[in-house]
Length: 234
Image 1: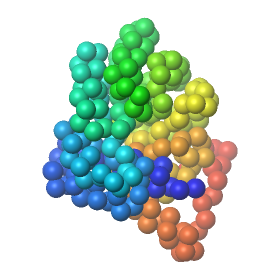
Image 2: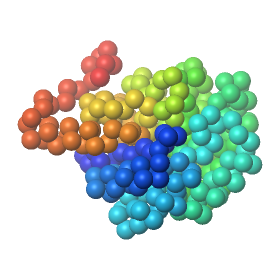
Image 3: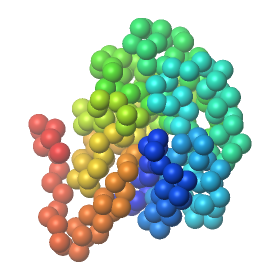
């Protein structure tokens, strides 16, 4: 299992400077992550910094609340694709989903998928604000709209990825749709537990400490990972 290739190294905090983003891209390239996930303003910078490294450039649309108009999400997605983004993590219209306006949520996401022109689209549910029924509805709508991943969180809500949510999301979507865990993925054991529950991609700022922990475990300096117990703890 290549843990690095399951990590989207997150560079989304609003206070990050251009130099911070460059350093973050250097980390992603050196550690061989799947991607970086940068703010829209940083896509061109990341694309230039990561050219030839094999690390994909991911970014966000409708972030962090999902509440901008569909036409704006579409324009943003097109602009991000033109700037060099390989993957788009889009926040669905959380309030509309909570209100049962599933047709609106579907149309919104389908328009973004179309605007992405074949690029990978990950739909962020923001699970902290949803009931289990709403999480299931969001996953099903995202798959129907053509999304490639369903994702737990932006990392800016009151809660992030949980084992229960990953299991629910994995059970809801078909095998052709992957599950991304984001929000609170800060340790190797957390990542491994969420992977066992069904997640295949992880958004985290703790990339280096997670991968350093993996290397230490492989050297026998840390105890082996214990599989998730019946109580779901990790």
